[in-house]
Image (cartoon, rainbow, N blue to C red; front, top):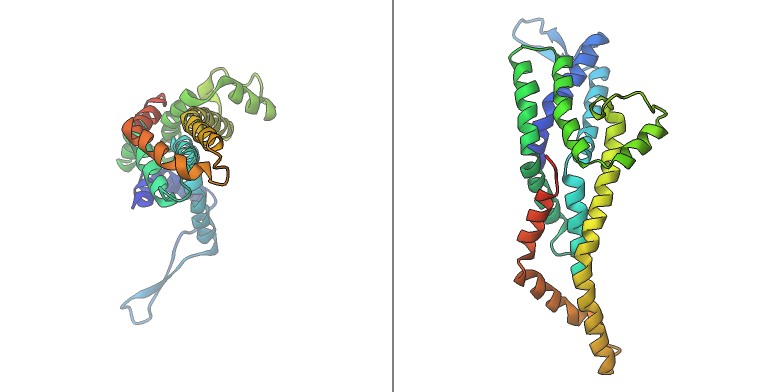
Length: 251
């Protein structure tokens, strides 16, 4: 369900790109062969359109790498590791939580894309390429709000395009996307480090107590786990974490 909702926001821009490319190259999307009896016919999809539809498999990766999903899922994974729970919450729960929190954070961006690009295109007020260019601007502004300048400069330098852009909005997505992901991973690990510290302190205290009692054969993780869970619940950890993650994005 979450994946279907996620795709609805971006399926139209992707179809716009594919249809524009197909029409520009003269590729027929569908051929119709009428039945000799006149009662029906057969439809056949060309090899070219199959190749275009295969490109849709890159849509989830592009979408997840251009939104807040990366930072959220990395922080949640670090939290689970810090507590010491290997399978709880499960991967499905973490991914679902990250997806819906992503919807919440990205809602203003998605709404702006809908207003400036999707609705005018559906109303035939702009061409497909114009709609695509209009849809890029809200996404670029969101990513630029999270990108560190040194990461952006790094990929501009690697692309050998220094001095070509008068302002950050002129930077193409091919450079913005890797810079955005790099900045998101750095931010996620910084947040994860701060999350790890209190749980690490509990592990060290429990290990010291067990050593002083001569119980060296007993794993400290078994003893510290309930204390870490209790501490996380008492401080309302989930609400604090979700609120902190949501407020950490500049939308």
